[in-house]
Image: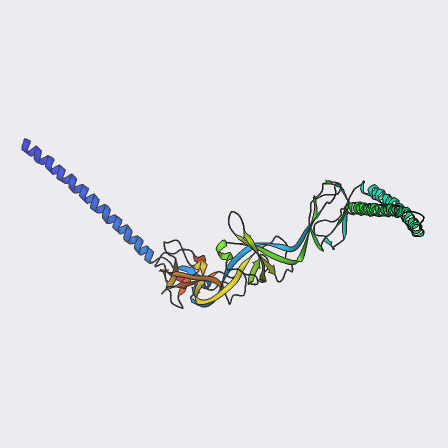
Length: 383
């Protein structure tokens, strides 16, 4: 009886093991079936549709190799009108955007003491002039008496000294008149240059201290780009080099030329400021942002837009289109620059590439990353 019970237990254990093994095998087969179904689904997945502009053809181009520059546009000629005396600002009617001419009176600073001081200095000068007349008559009389032998030469020397003293006192009083007149004239605010009012920093009725800024005047007829360039790139810049710049809102490029290079590097980032004069300033304003490239040299090579080169792998690569499918191809990068045939200053930055044959079809950078082997279909060109 015990023997039969033991065999029964053994049979149950064998059945349990067999059932577990069956479940494991069945699970693996199910997973394999799912993987196969996914593979088949991937094979029959619809191709990615791209526009014709998304596919670039690699070809030989002449690159204008240069140094990129960017910065704010500023007026070559600008000036602040400052208060030369302390007092209340009066008669300041010009506002931002108004045109003024060099020497034009734009306001005054009330200086109540300047007028009386000028009158005082003028009266002192008149008194000194009278003293000169008296001293001159005494000198003439004494000289005549000395010539006739009526008085000694010592008396003539005394009258000579008195005349010289009166003349010196008169010159000093005349200088005092000039100083008082200048103090009165300093209260008049005049435009030092012709241009437009860019800022009105003081309002009528306010009291201004000496050297307080009243208005800023800019001359927009001559504009220049103040570009900050890295220390290494600055060594390639020279006065007279040409550049093409682009400004937001202006479709056509603007020619520019380096006219000055700051001899000092900016503390901290060690950058160097280069100043580029704009050939055409029509319609531009101070403070607008401009960017472009200073032409240094040119080279000919197989080139692509730099945006088409991907760097999300250890080595740079491009996405090729071969027989309607995507392939990843590692490339070696060379010189960078703007295509000499580009007609716009904002043309894309190109880079010379090695490792590809001329005529290769490369996906543009706007496409985004695609898996190797992905099917591609080229649709109609976007209008």
